Image 1: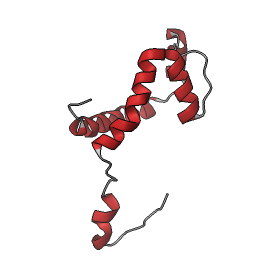
Image 2: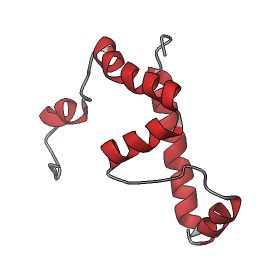
Image 3: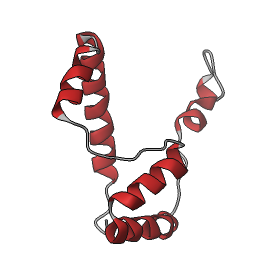
Length: 101
C-alpha cells in the first residue's frame, strides 16, 4: 500500500478514484460461487472460507453464549467506531447496488 503525505491538489482526483470493473465481469466471477452455495450450502461456505480467507472452519453457527462473551471483550468506543464504519460502508454500497443482483 502506498502512503501519501500532503499530496498536491493536481493528484487528488487520481488518488481518490476507485478502480472500476464491469458488472458483467463481476457477475461472471460471482455466479459460480453463488450457485455452489445454493447447491452445497454450508459445505460450500466452508470451502470458500478456506479458499478466500485461509481459515479452516468446521461449523458456521456461533452460539449466543459465544456472541455474548465476545461482546464483553470489545471496548464501547471501538463498538461505536465499528457501527459508524458499518453505516458509512452500507450507505456507499447501497448507492452502488445493481438491480440484477
